[in-house]
Image: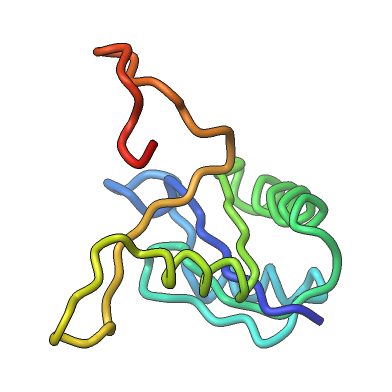
Length: 124
């Protein structure tokens, strides 16, 4: 079984799409996922599971939809992908340790040009 990091978007924000983390853990364990842990009320979750990211996203999305009545966007990363993202941080915090790193992940293709300016996006 592989270690996965699940990043849910749009749950528990402004009183909408409420998902108690205890219920999310129970739901994911019911799908056969193991060592399920959540982080605060954010919907971020770590677990061990088998299968591809696409299959897990489909199974988890369907289960959340049945249980809570909506289907949130979910990005899944394995531990190697998360470590690669952290290692590629273009703004290392020299002298202050690496206890925090903020980054974003997309489930779709990158936007190559800013819609407002038509110029290449940052990092290109």
